[in-house]
Image 1 (cartoon, protein in one colour):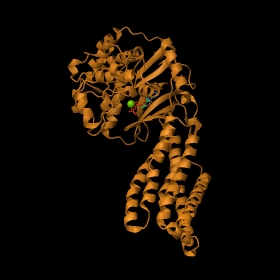
Image 2 (cartoon, rainbow, N blue to C red):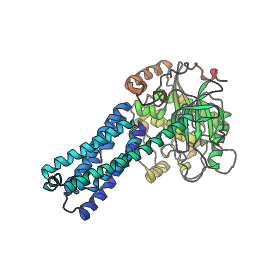
Image 3 (cartoon, rainbow, N blue to C red):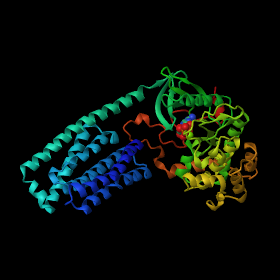
Image 4 (tube, rainbow, N blue to C red):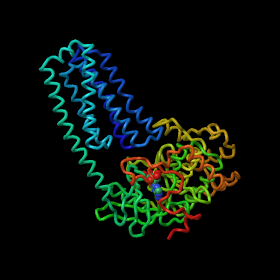
Length: 515
Ligand SMILES: Nc1ncnc2c1ncn2[C@@H]1O[C@H](COP(=O)(O)OP(=O)(O)O)[C@@H](O)[C@H]1O
Ligand SMILES: [Mg+2]
């Protein structure tokens, strides 16, 4: 569904760019046409797609409903374009060819069956013709065209050409789509068969994959084809770095390597749950006791990493993964992708232009240079804690240079100004993590952990269970199998906290089951 909406998203820009065409057409080609009608029709088209995407996202609409809405959207769009055509020469308007772009995008947009697409195209023809028929009632010129054999020949001739173009474009789009699917389905990396994509970033994708040699599910991180040498090296170092860590709160690396055709991958234990960014966005800020409990687990993972000389460098809510275990909330730190060993003066692998960290969660010293060390992770964890408590980031609303300026100098508001339940002591802990000068933060993760422990907030398995139950009630769509075209690909697209049914519930201590 996201893909559908994503493809549709480009049309919003097509609508906007079309304003330039309209103005040109109105000034130069058809000066007699009505500005109000033409620009009004276009202006009505601009918000159509964003509104539809908003509704689909907000209400977590299932794929078939989105499909039907998309259909309605195309009909409304064609009608609006038809209104302009009526002004631009009516039946003989070459404007009808503007539908080409639309027609080419449709199969990619909606993954509709071919027969349906022809019906859809037929519906566009009917709508367009109906608009011109209505226009005849208002415009004597269009009315005359309906009785002019030449105009009618041009009209139907144009639609004939359009049909041919549409057919060819659709065929190509289908073939590309089928090829893509085949590639994805047939894709096997070493002994891993890819099942469903869990996430994708600028440099890699994470897939749920079946490990054929060990008969288990794994999370497989795959580097996008043909990584630069620097990126590939960094990837391997992530694997090496992670292998040396044993905290139950650090994602476990099972294997790494490259396929025969040179695609690099990293197999990790497959976690079931939800990342903290998604959790907070869906369920809102969390009680201080829960936030502190989770932050302490992150401290345990990052503390061990730091002692081994590994800095995570991208600590943020989306890289902290929450699972519901029988003994309560269990947090795992993932995505050590840009970790590097601080004790070696190796060449910085981070190529200029690579996005390192996320400005809202990145320490000021890392924004300006390469001096970031373990205290940068303290900042990231502090900003994460801020987000868990308030549902907002410390400098929410700022972007670009203003954000950089604020991060490097300003003190953020205390979390309690946005979440009244936060105590002054917890405020102080968070703000200390967010100090602009690294030396003003806690000395290390152990010190932060001790400060959080001193708050005496308790978060039990029972508390966690209540939260999980509530969050499942709050978003009942969460676990409903989406009626997408490919049900077998659905498992974790919309992760939730409930233990997934395709594997046995995890043991109380997740390490117990590990080799
Ligand atoms: N071990 C895992 N088990 C389950 N899902 C995972 C695992 N690792 C990553 N994911 C999913 O993939 C997404 C992206 O992974 P991440 O390692 O953060 O890579 P990046 O942010 O570089 O794309 C995560 O937000 C999570 O949803
Ligand atoms: Mg990530």
